[in-house]
Image (cartoon, rainbow, N blue to C red; front, side):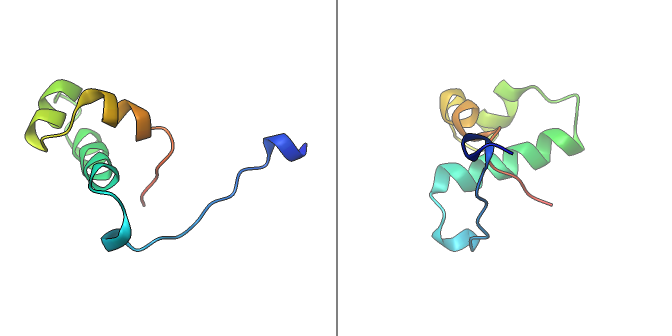
Length: 63
């Protein structure tokens, strides 16, 4: 594996994360559990902009 391909991961407590990251995690869980819901509906429900959601959605993960 090339050095540039290596990604570091961190385990961080939820209470120290920025609000937009926490909301993004909640939205991802909501969309996973309710595939019929649109991204627009989900971000509106959690009062988060779509641009903030798209900024973080592919870089944060939950189990």
